[in-house]
Length: 398
Image (spheres, rainbow, N blue to C red):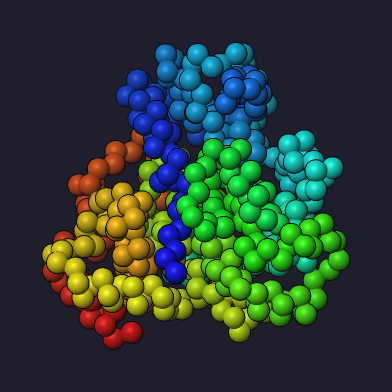
């Protein structure tokens, strides 16, 4: 089955970056370490909203980019600002308790929402059975631990998440679609999970339909539940998709990717596909580590055999749109996995250096195809013929 993981980053953030660039060109101020806490009342999607946070970008005539205490990003045009003041209170993210109190006002238990907060930095909001929610809570916690462990072992500098990471685990497609509509997200066909870089939340639902029957069941998970879940049609797809989107969330919250800057889509997606590989033998349905993603490897081999491009890797690095076009998405997801896997296995030191270059990007960092290539060549060299041959030979031997 054709599976395209659509990150909201490339679908719904074009406006964000268009405005951000405008703010920068309009003498924007960058203040990520500002101690002043801003209190902003503004119009947002037809409603009045009040948020506390810090200003990331500001231009007097254009507006502001506000990072709220719950980690959400708001681009607010000047005309939509109703009231604004600042005080000497230091900016601090919400604690888990504060975040849950805030979320319960928007997603109240009276409407079937339940909460779990014992899974590391995650807050799980669920309408499924408690057993199903616990499964995903453990899966996300394990992913976070192993992700950080893996990349730090390769010399990549990561940080603790500044904000509690929110994950919605929903019981059916109707609830999922309703939530996505509130998020202003356009979903692809058969999409069962997504990460929204603006809200900093992930959402997933059970595509098997079984959780609709058990919605609200609050009993604990059993070994039998695990067996039944993995036996359900679509369970591994659910796990793969949830892991893929959670990798985006973990990456943006641990400093792997600077959340306020442009990031090459090939790398964000390459890391997500690198980690997404399911494992039906494990009770969680997933195990960490640099496993070969067999479906992506098959897709990549087919693509490399038929492509006539002299250097498809260069094109992928430069052009984010290749991941959003139906005719090129599948092959480029496979290529992104292949390049990531190759670099992890054969050139980990250079990969860590490359990640460091990208981690240092800021909201006002320039971005262009030429800069993308320059960043890559600064760590891996400029002999693309040699690089492609070594990559191609490596893939052929797997």
